[in-house]
Image 1 (cartoon, helix red, strand yellow):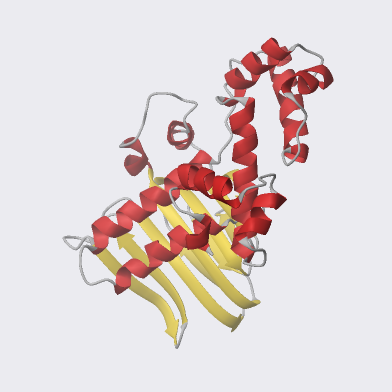
Image 2 (cartoon, one colour):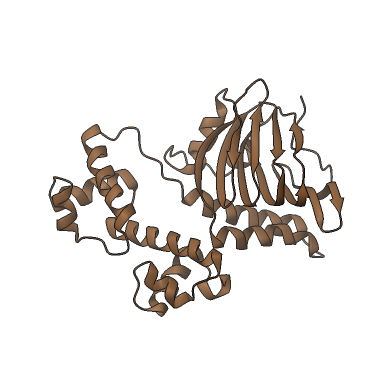
Length: 304
């Protein structure tokens, strides 16, 4: 086996074209030691496979804008699939695997590989933090395992564009690209929902009942007393348990769901910003824009 990382020597930003024909390419980019990404853009192509011989522990984030992408662990018969408009997070501990770009009219895929020693820089010693969770998981001897799957959103597309376009800039490639990768990690990991294993079964049941309701009704939710009633508890207990389980208030959770949905709607570039705001429960576009900026650091109009 060999290391996926440590392949750039003294150069801190290295681009390798694995395939190139006109505007089509499969491009590997090494950013310092510890981060590698693959930028894949193909048209009307047959299935393409490439093997990763790996002695590293890593997290892998796959983003599929067009086409379909699978990961198959060596010795396994079950492939893990990433489809169009999906963002998936995988973990792997020193396992060889094959990356397959399925035959398609068009494939536009981004794959980010993050070494455990890079994650280690940002540990908080709180196992309920996403980076600590992922780091701890890949310290065990596991195969390729999916830990998260969510829809592709506008902000992810925006950050990926900055990561890929770094190669077109003339100076400071490595530090700029690493900064953008960290921004992407913060965004994707912040969307992960981790539940503390110490939470009691009764508390978890109440919290999950409330969460299930909010997931389906965040545009026009019930008041908290009404929500407590359908969760068979009282308002004080519901607020305390919900914050204990999901590490946020019910109000902030509703805002999170609304803005995540807005992020998805903005990706399609069909609705106006005002229409998106109303679609997720905000009457005033200006208020929606301020909340979006506070959460993501960018205004909706800049994504549009």
